[in-house]
View 1 (cartoon, rainbow, N blue to C red):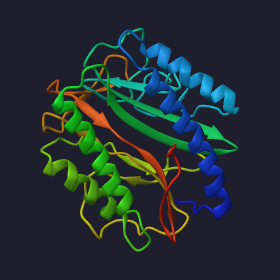
View 2: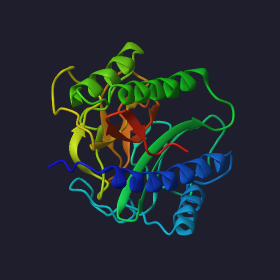
View 3: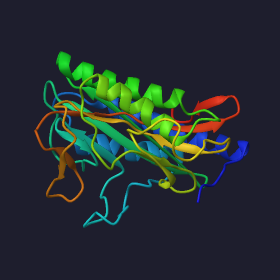
View 4: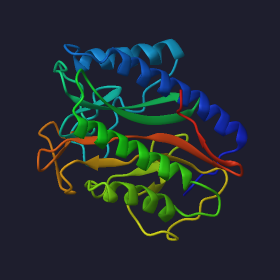
Length: 255
């Protein structure tokens, strides 16, 4: 069931989205050679505490997970696509890092992700990240009243496939509101004109993921959470929480 949010509710979700944006910005600015993933998680913790917000990630346990997620920040490095658990690993020159973060404030959730490189960037990584960002922008542009979920999926998939990248099957965006994951699902590839119509008050987390090697295959790491590319190639992830409004898409997790 899809809950349509009022203007007041969307404004409240924007406040949760600001916390998400602040945490991602702080973690990204701190990410440098020698900084550990646990350090980044601690920074995100501090942002939540200062905002009097809570984490929808910490303790979350979907059906596929053997244990609850133990952190507030997902940190996925190099061949990790999503759901990376922060560890004592210290960032190295040239690492490609994707960080995903959520916050709950005033009963509403926000969710966003960003990818970046540490130290000296590799040109192929820059292109991969830019493609994820362009796919996100295309998905957001398609998130208008009168379109359908398939139009968002098609916009994302077209950008990713044109660049020659893979798209991990079965993982994509989702509705968001009082809970982090709500209906409807938002695939990262699909046929235009298909799926649920987009209506004012729908709020979606749109999140392209791309695999540099061009294949779609991945596997779950031994930690039960991290998804890694089967071919060992690098991956990138971009995400925003977006409200469907009569005036067009409204990004709720922008800084």
